[in-house]
Image 1: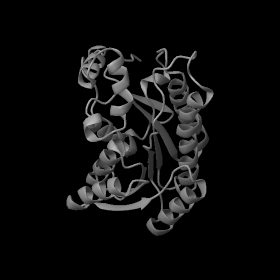
Image 2: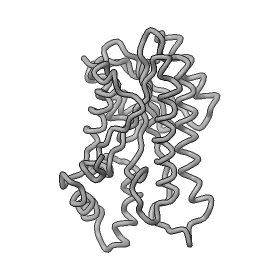
Image 3: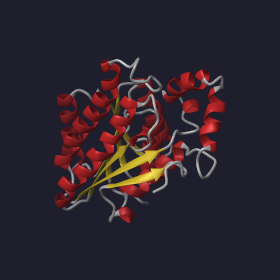
Image 4: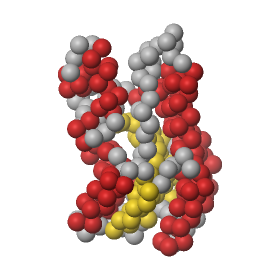
Length: 264
């Protein structure tokens, strides 16, 4: 198994966080899932336990720095270390409003919350990682980090920030045997059906074009080289590989899961 005997902390029990937790557990990791929604936490815990995996959950607000620090320290004390961490928490934000109508608060919301959550969680786990056991911090961004699409100022700035944060943190933590790798998926075709907030994020875009959500997603798929969108499972399986020793030479990198929407 790719992650046998690893301790993995996943912040967020939404569509991506839950899928990654299940794959990590399948690959032998002891998984700790934290989030604010008890129902979502219970669902992923039941799925992992039913499959014979090891899982613990905790209700936690990733914007509460002291609570996140205490949670990470408790895991490290009981488990012996934190080997893998992923912040999969998302925040509803504006996509589609141009600068003429965009307020400062709406612009700053994704910049502040995505980066604040990433800073808090990364700082909390880093002291309990590395040294004799390789540590891995995984981050999540989006195509907006590099694509120029009008009406996405706050989103683009926040995602570019996530990628810059990841590269810089990789340089800081590399000497301590900690890798940092960012995963950049395109819009996930099956995420809305899985209960992701992206359904509500994308629906206004579709309606503005006179399309249903499925039609809009179909159009997005046709804009990629592969003529399809990535799925949640692609993110989860990639995360497991990146967190494993098989990707031991990767750090400061962005894994491009855009199905060719962005060529690198």
